Structures are given as C-alpha cells and as structure tokens.
Length: 547
Image (cartoon, rainbow, N blue to C red):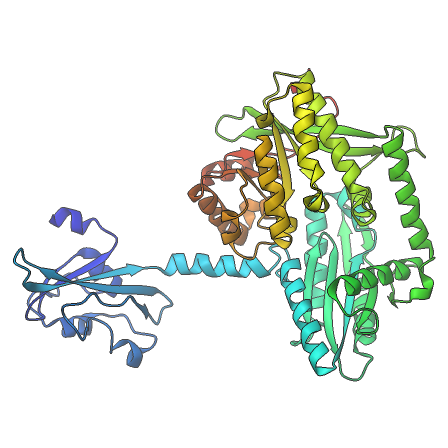
C-alpha cells in the first residue's frame, strides 16, 4: 500500500480523529515543497503548511479552506488553491470510517491541475482567435457584429464595418509558397492592429480577408481608419528571393444602419464596396455605393458566373486526386478528390478552386458543382474497386439541400459502390455556424452509410462540445496549425489538445498541409492517424493508385 501511494501523482494526507497527521505521500510533499527531513507525522494538520516554502496567491481566502472542514462527517467541497507561482491545486477530503461506522480520520487529496487549466485556457483562446495572426476569428467577429447591431438598434448608435483583403495575395502564395504568404499575413495584421483602438474589433475572417468594426461618434471614423490602414499596408517592405514586393490593400466600408440593419446585408455591402475599391485601382478604400453596382468588379463576377455555367454545361471541370496516408507505416488510406476548372480562354490552363468556388458559393452554382464532384467521384470508385475510399468536399450551402443525400444514395446504388467508400468532407466553420442544418444533413448522410469528415478542424470552433452533436467519424486538422509546426510551440499545444479530444471521442484524425519530414515525424509522435500534403504527394489527375 505504501508503494502504491508513493507512486501516485495525487498528493495524499491522512489525519487521525484528533486532527493530527498520520501519513503523507511524496507527491503531497512535492506539491507543497516540504523538505524530506521535516517529520510531519504527529503534527496538528493545521500546522503542516507552516513548513511549506510555497506562497498562496490569496492567503486570506485560502486559509479558511485549506485542511479545514466544518463538518468532519461530510465530504468536503472541491476547493481550488491558487499558488503565487501560478500553479493551481485542487483540494478534496473524505471522512474515513471503521467497519462499525465510527469516523477514524479524514483523507485529504490534492491534485495539480495547472496543465489542464492552461490547456482549457488555450482552447478558449483558440475558440475566439485566429491561430496564425492572433486576431479574433470569423466566429468571434460574427458574434460581436450581432451584438453591435443589437446594441446600436436599441441606442440609436452608428458604426462602420471595414472589409478588406490584400491585393495580389494569391500571386505571393502561388509564387513564393504558403510560408511566405503566412509571413505577409502576420506582418500586415500586426501593422493594422497597431492602428485599431481598444474598443474596436479587428478580425481575420479567413485567407487574406480581414474586417474591422468601429463605432461612429463624429461620423468620419471609418474613413479615417481606412485611410490609415491603406497607408500602413502599402508602407510594409517585403523582399522574397531577391524580389522587392509592394503590398497593397483594398477596403470596402458599409455603415450601420445606412447600408444594412442586419449582419448579412452589412457584410455583403462591405464586400461589394471592397470590389468597388479594387475597380478604382486598388490600394484605396470606398464606401458602399448602391448606384455603382455595375462597376467592372461586378461585371467580372458576372463573367465568372458565366464561365462556371459554361464549365458545368460543357464538361469543363475535372478531378485531381491527392493521397491521405497512414502515419504509422506510410501506406495509402484513401484519396481526396479536388475539383479544377479548365480555362476556356487559355487551352491547357487549369483554374484552381480558390478562384471560382467563392463566386459559385455566392451565386448558388456551388450546388451544381457539389453534385458534379460527387457523381464523378462515385463513378471513379466504381471504375477502381481496389481503391479503399474517396473523400469529397461538400459546401455549407448544401446543408439545406434535402435532395442531396438522396442523390448520393441513388448514385451509390446505381454504380454498386459500398457507401463506406465515400467520405463526405464538411468544413467545421460551416457546420458550427449552421449547426441544426448540419446536424440534419449529417444524419441523412449517415443513413446512406457514408463516412463523415469534419474538414478544417480547429479553424473556428466555439467549443468542442459541438462534436457530440455532429456525427463525424474523421476530423481533419486545419492546415494553419500544421504549417511550420516544428517551430511553433503554440500550434503544437493546439494540435496536441485537438488530438486528445479526438482520441477521447473515438475519432480518426487527419493532418493536412504536411510539407516536410520534420512535420510528419512530429505528427506521428503526437498520435495523428493520417497525413496529407506535398511532402507525401501532390494532387494530380492520374494518381498512381488509380492505375
């Protein structure tokens, strides 16, 4: 028994019926920094901590609770002890009785929960902040915007929404790589954050899109801030691989309530104003002007709509495939299908989804693209019976499309494909923001027998509790946590926490954007089940596993 108690990480003190120490284990001494040569046995329990070298953060408060109970026949309430060095201990005690029911003493238990509390605080932070830039994330921005709308509606107040992105950011990403792109984002976010006042909200909404919410007292605050942001970003010096780059931003401004009395209208009009600014030559800002809806930017969107429609009608889409591999032995688990669009204006050129999917989501054409990708993926599974499974991405716009699960079921039956070979990937941010629709959609998909993967896991969650309600079997950790993982301690902590939660819930984990061996080795050590990224293979129309 002594060996068992000595090996426990929980601190234990047993006092007899006279409130004197009968036993303490090594963990108790270690937690309270009591030297080994101090004999505690026989001392009054209340005198034990006189021998501790630790200081209490709140001594007046703690002294009334530590090693003290009012009713010796009852279990004590759980009490947290804050130490001056930042550690947190929990205290709990139980009365101990002999076989005849007589109380013979009390057992005091102490546990150091500092690590668990820090992890919880990190998760709370992650729930509201973007891991790359440290800014508020889209989920927190949406919450704050709704609160501002409610408060301003009641008080008659006004505020402005600044919506902006970095001009030519895609060129930087494609030419110099994602790490260079991340560097640009972090630097730009830092410069703009220095201009934002305490009462204003600055958020990264995703990619290179940012938003600022600013209250209007004099009326010109949004325009003044926009001017400072444009100037600050254009003044940032960047040099990559011997090339000097000038970074610029285009900012759109929508005002409450002038340009919208709800979140959807305000964001849409600020987005339109941003494109109006781009139409004015970029590196500038514009306040939303409804009369300018026929600007070049709007015409460009209409052009994209027609190009997407043409691709859908004339078989202008194609699938590329990238492998997802087991980390334990490097074997192929399954493939992910990634859509590309052939450029009708330049033969042989492929248009990446980042260029046309956002437009398709706004125009509603994404529903047709989803069906095309699913249909072609099921055909691929039928043509390659040796392929274990194929994952396809489905837009959040499809959550309220009740006919889609039925379409998937019928297509699987028609081609004789086992449902478990089709993995449906849904983005976490879309699933959380449309929780009820996502729940219904996932339940309908599960009835078909398909597996569900929650993509971009960790990018915008408000709490892990939602995982109980979304029946996803696979969690794909967002790539922003994986890039540069070996050199980023914060991301390492976040990834470990996500893996622990996933493992506790019986979920399979996948890490995307694995770009080097060091990252893969670290993920394997952390316990990630599968990995995907350029280090393992690149997307291609003719993946080796399809030969």
